[in-house]
Image 1 (cartoon, rainbow, N blue to C red):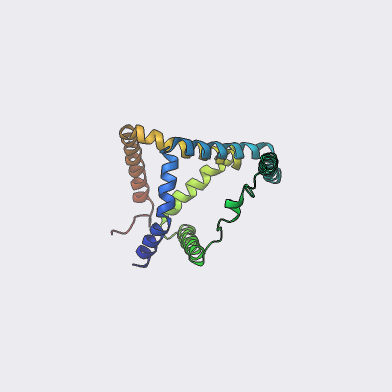
Image 2: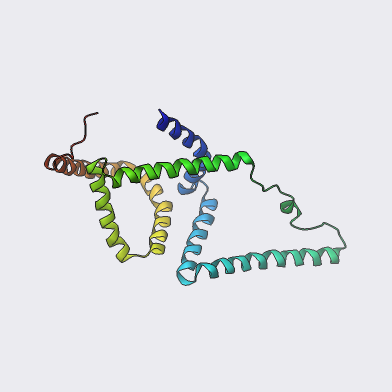
Length: 208
């Protein structure tokens, strides 16, 4: 009952963010998705050439150059036209940007739920509550050692970002064919797992 309540609470907290993420990943707004996708790739490729400190410094300098130039341009324009429009960024300077106590509490609760869920799952896997699940996790970690030998973390992150913005669209377009092949793979994996469970003492799941 407690796990179900936590899951419901977590779904409510993140429903808006999930909706926005789905709209981005499925290219519902091409312009918005293109800006986010391009910015992420530019940032990640920059990190392959420069250190994190350098990238942050260059981004800050670029932003400051743009805002300072615009501020000077508007000041000169106001002086020439003899107008008094005020600070060009006044609307943004007056904008309320403080997080409310409720917002902070909401994000803290959500983070706590995810951390607790992750710790419980890792405890279950490492302490072999279910032998088959622990074996699957061990195989996954073994495969990741080969992945880590071929790619560094930043390359994997770039591949993950590209996949996030392409695979959902591809799946949406070819869902029937992909589901068919995934069903065949899932059936084959379940068959192999069933054979392993039958041969390893104590690996058989308890009947629900």
